[in-house]
Amino acid sequence: MNTTRNAPRGLAAFGLALIPLAIQAQAETDSRDTAVDLNPLVITAALAPRTADETLSSVTLLDEATLRRQDPTSLTDLFRGQPGVDVISNGSFGKSSSVYIRGTDNKSTTLLIDGIRLRSATAGGAAWSSLDPRMFERAEIVRGPRGSLYGADAMGGVVQLFTPEGEGEPAPRISLGGGSFDTQRYSASLSGAEGGTRYHFAASRFDTDGEPIRRGGDDMGYDNTTALARMSHTWDTGAEVGLLALRARGSNEYDGGENDFVQQVTGIYGELPISGYWRSRVTLSEARDEYESIDDFGFSIIDTRTQAARWQNTFAFGAHELVAGAEYSEDKVSSTNDYEVDSRDNVAVFAQGLFDFSPFALQTSLRYDDNEAYGDEVTGSLALGYDLDTHHTLRASYGTAFRAPTFNDLYWPGSGNSDLDAETSETFEVGARGQYRAWFWDAALYQTDIDDMIDWAPTESGLWAPQNINETRLRGAELAAGAELGDWTLQAALTYLDPEDRGEGESRGNDLPRRATQSLRLDVDRELGDWSMGGSWVVQNHRYNDAANQERLAGFGLLNLRAGWDFAPHWSARLTVDNALDKEYETARDYINAGRAAFLSVHFGAL
Image (cartoon, rainbow, N blue to C red):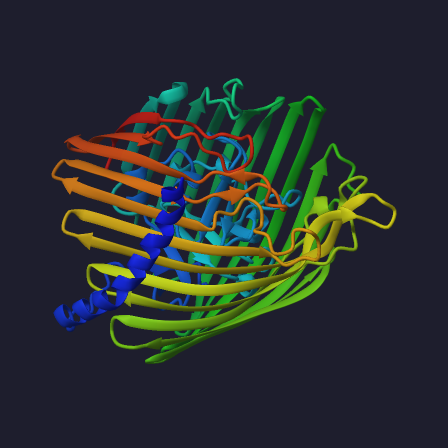
């Protein structure tokens, strides 16, 4: 256990010590090479396409090649151990999971699918385990506050999933496979482009008997059927319209019962070039999070629906850019629980300036939200960047954000508190990035202070209810690196977190529950002609399950292995072995995750 706990710290020190030597070596051998093969374009960080170093943010891109190589059964397998990211699971295969970014909880992580927000307005946060990774082409993880761009809940960061757009000749893809725990996976898609029209249609099915989520328990099954349609058309004038529809439906067994779920996003958009320097885009969308459960307490339904309209304008002035717009959204709840209020609306206006005064860069943003349930909030951010040379960029930023109280916080029958304010935060960050032809590194230090945290506490009448009582200080350091060296693809991430409870109770000075303070992730892949081989190693130290820091959950190390074989034109086979060392581990007390699991699949189509 001591080895597991100390490994991230020792490797972090070793990695940081190598940075100056790496910079010197690269400068000497590659001083005239300004290629940026590992400096991808990302959209989420700045509402506009920017290379990773230009965003002045801590950002991770998981591209299509990464998703296809790892072929994860869940998004949380893909996210676990990424820089600044922790995953909490109440078991495997569809069981409730949370994504913590920089120590903030799941309710403070915003999930977008092609720009459309998906979450539960009652419980807060997204249902990560109900989404099939095979439906998406890439994922962007932005760490740090983005409240001034996306409004409520983007306190820890934003994850955006992108579906394929379609290009070229019609391209069908089919995948069939299965493995441990009587698991079956099927998927099929068709994508392409004709003239100015792009399209992508896909469907998938996942079905498993599952594993016990408690020691000595029964297998807990899970199934998921997902359909996706995306189309767009672009005219010669540059005008564009498009639509997206994604629906995941399935069932999930858990202790004492089971639930049926629906996760759905639909949207249409139109974009028009008003002039050579002004583009305007309007998006209308709806997101649904629906659950029907039957358990020892009876039958219940909780459905939430968010309808939104967003108008965004982009103005280009040479090397500078201005983004401004407005957004209206309405949350609605339909439930067997008798909520005192079952709807609320939010009106927002926002603006962002992206200024390039090379070698200096400046980014600033401001947003005003007015919510009929908890009042108005103003959030903003300021980021400064400086290019030391063609390879190295320094950055510093300050940002504010807020987390909206959920319908459960405000109106849960018998215990809701309609007087709650939103949680608020401010974050300071400094970072540096080295970007070279075949590799990169990125380092960041940050501190986030959260006020008016919502927590349960006794009221004057003696009843317990959500109240604005707690404060938290989150400090951390992150180091990420990646390389493309011949047939090798390498990625590494080191994370250190100090999640301190700053409240007035007995837990003051303790670690926040369920946060690992040290984490390491290594991904190594090798191409061998028609064959490929790779693996991921994730190591995390211990964490506490409770605020008093009395219930200690042991650290763990996970090894996932994978291999691929292109055995004929357009045909391939893949084998993945998750938790290859068959470790028993838990991130929430008494909920164990699956042991060793092997999956074999056969694929047809260009990859």
